[in-house]
Amino acid sequence: MAKFDLIVIGAGPGGYVCAIRAAQLGLNVACVEGRETLGGTCLNVGCIPSKALLHATHQLHEAQENFETMGITAKPKVDWSKMLSYKDDVIGQNTKGIEFLFKKNKVTWLKGWAAIPEAGKVKVGDEVHEADKIVIASGSVAASLPGVEVDEKVVVTSTGALALEKLPKKMVVIGGGVIGLEMGSVYARLGAEVTVIEYLDRLIPGNDGEVAKTFQRILKKQGINFVLGAAVQKAEVKRNKATVTYTLRKDDSEQTIEADCVLLATGRKPYTDGLGLEDLGVTLTKGGQIETDSQYATSVAGIYAIGDAIAGPMLAHKAEDEGMAVAEILAGQAGHVNYGVIPGVIYTTPEVASVGETEETLKDAGRAYKVGKFSFMGNGRAKAVFQGEGFVKLLADAETDRLLGAHIIGPMAGDLIHEICVAMEFGAAAEDVARTCHAHPTFSEAVREAALACGDGAIHA
Image (cartoon, rainbow, N blue to C red; front, side, top):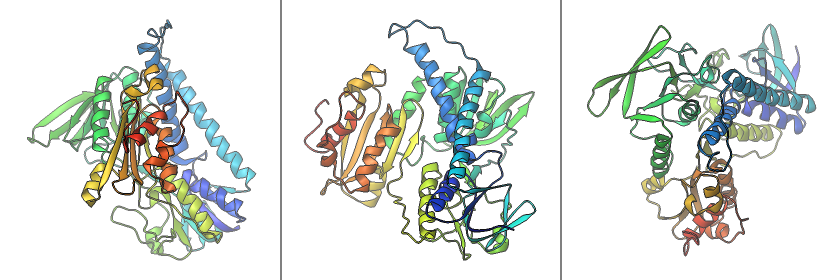
C-alpha cells in the first residue's frame, strides 16, 4: 500500500493537468489511468486525432479546389491507411509527451482502473492506495440513442469514426453539433456523401444564431446535406449497410436513408462506472454528473471532482482550468475558474469560435447591447487564402462599451477568439481593442475592425 497526498483518477486533460500542477506545488501525487497511454479521450480518440484528420483533409481540399488557381499543378491521391498512420503518429507524440511530463514532475502513474472503496482509499487492480485527497477526473463517453446500436464498424461513435477500415461512400451523421460537423466535414472532403440529421431546427445549439445560419450555408456549399427538425427512430444494419429511420417533426412523416456508415454524435455523458460513488454516498445529478461546490468538493469529505464528470461544458480546456484550480485549492491557494470566459471552437473550414454572451442570451436577459460586425471579405489576408466568407461579431454593453461576447466564423477563428478572451478577462471595452495596433496583413485585423464597428465604424467595411 502506497500513501499519497493526492490521487487523481483519470489522465485526460483535467486529470493530468491537475496531477502535474499539484506536484509543482509540492504535493506527492499519483494519477490512475487504465488506458495503455495517457491523455484520456482527448489525446487518444478525440481532440488531437480529429484535428489531424481535419488538417490532412483540408490540405486535400486545397489541392483539389485552389492549387490550380494559385498556379500549382497537382493531382492528389488519398492513401487512407497512410493517413490513419499519420493520425496515430500524432497521437503517439502527444501521449508520450504527457508521460515525459509525469516523470519530470515526479507524478506516479498507477496503471489500471480505479475504484474508491472508502474515502481516503483508491483501489487499482488488487492494490489499495491511501490518499489525503482524491480528485475524480474520469471524463465522459459518447451518449447513446434508443434504437441506435453502436458496433464501431457500421454504426460508430467519434471513436470508431477515427479508425474506419475503409472510406464510406455515404455517411449519415446523427447530431448537428461540434463532433458531428467536424467528422462529417472530414469524410465529405474525402468524397463521401454526408447527410446530417439534427433534432432541432438549427445547427450548433447554444451558438450565435447568425453564425449557425452562415455555417450551415457554407457547409452546404461544401457538399454536406442537412435534415433539420428530425427525430431519429432507429438504425438497422444488414450486410454492412445501415438504414436510418427518422420522423420529421413538422408533419410526423417517417423517412429513411441508407448509408455505409452512421456516426452517432448526439453528445456525451459523464463516465463514472466502477468508481463506487453510490456506495460512498457521493451525490449525483439526474444527468449522472457529480455534484460539487464552488471548491470542487463532492458530498463526501476528501473527494473532489472536475471536468466532464461535473456540470458545465464538456471541453478539454474547461477541464484543464478546473484541474489547475482544484490543485491550487488543495495546496492552500485560491484556485479559480472564470466560467464566463471559456471559449468554444469548431475546427472545420471555416472555423467557428465563440466566447461569452450571444445576442439571444442578452435579449433574454433584457440587457442593452451593441453589435460590432466585420466581414472577412474586407480582410486582405483572408481573401488571399480563399476564406473571405464569414465574419467577426463583437457584443458590447450599450452604455459602458465593456465586451460581453464574441462570435467568429472564418479563418483561424479558434486562435483569434483568444484576443477577446484576454480582453474580457481584464474587463476591457471594445474601444480598447479598437485602439490596439494590429499587424497588417493578418486575420486579426478583422477583430479590430469589428471593435471599431462598435464605435464610429469599421474602416474597411
